[in-house]
Length: 558
Image 1 (cartoon, rainbow, N blue to C red):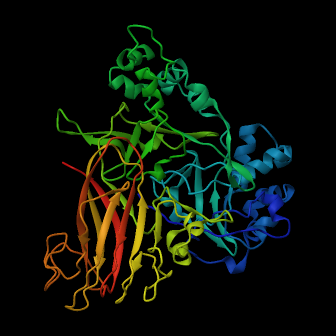
Image 2 (cartoon, rainbow, N blue to C red; image 1 turned 90 degrees about the vertical axis):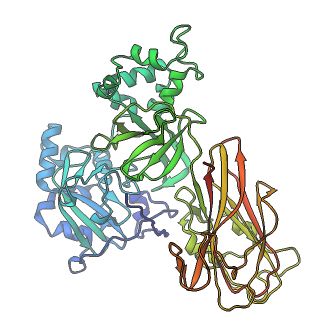
Image 3 (cartoon, one colour; image 1 turned 180 degrees about the vertical axis):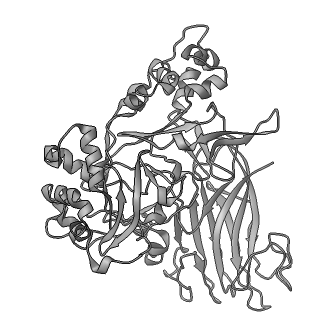
């Protein structure tokens, strides 16, 4: 699964574009796609104007006041229906031509074909692009037959890829894309293959909150309007349930409800069937293209879905205690990424039962934010660690931008201390013969209950045989881990068990002639699912020529 990291910048279009596109200046944009050529400098609107196969689209854009924004500077993407595509749409709707489409309807329809970011075909995935169209909805991408045969929303085919203009990229399509019009409930109701699970949502009282509710988030503004609050479902079809011996809702209740033989109180959130149903939903967007080795809390509070992208997409992959065999729930990818106006439906290939998670390894980087920990600048734009971190000194106000890392110097020292090099993008600190320390504090993502060994990964420079010593004190949630630790960069063995003398030890990575260290620094036992604070205080140093901090690891004790 390709993971992408975007650049972000302000974009305010001139000459009335803000009104036409309903854009906000607090707008995130993706990295520009690969440039394949620029049609002799023609803008997207001029490409349409000069190509007769797009005459209906060109006329439609003019009539809805959307032509001007496609004719000025920017980085946009347009999925362009040809004239033949529009004729299919007219036939489907039973209308004669473009003039018979309501102006507001047409404008909303056209906005669903435009992104305010430039996405060449290199960005196409099994899922969606990173951002919605300027209509506010997503488009479903299917590249299983290859990029040249990309399907959009399951039915529309891309005829021509990557027609590059001076202000963006155009992809020609053979039909008109229609925005989602049903909420999750109505989408499922129209598809009898999900009837058992839909009945389960109804009879547990979860339909109104999870499936039917359509609401926006006032804290997230895109294109001048609040963004939709999305839900994600991971559902079994009736066929998948039947393969597990479940042929009806009653079979499902009998197997999963702890009140089936007594009160049948399925709407009670303590009922295990109710929890089973809520376990199938997330209170956020999660397309197949979003998959990674992460975990997300489901609607069943305190119960997490563990997503895996290694070795195929799956959920809750683990070793069964009894059989000692690997167990996982696979994804039915072709029948996933189904769009509704308030969420997405993904299909699973086996029953997704409640799973009480076991401890899993958690890695928290010092630099480079985790995917779910973005940096939102005071002006509302989104940045990345490498761009922003070097700009901010030891100042609590500036540090508030970084949700997971804090840093500072002992009371009474200058900031930065004399002789201290600047923090770099990979969080390197350079000290040369200075008797001043510093501290770094990390907040972890959620960690499941259990016992963990804590490791610190870093590298240190060995420039000479002189003593290079820095003593550190490690704390976890305010409690010290062991005694003071000497991070002696000139000792005989590194933390991976290899010698630091002579050739690079097998399996040890080198960085600018530095050995990478993996130091065991203590053990912790955690009783709840929570975030935790790790802090290290580096005491006054002697001839410490360089240290590069990578991450801490919490590894479950076998």
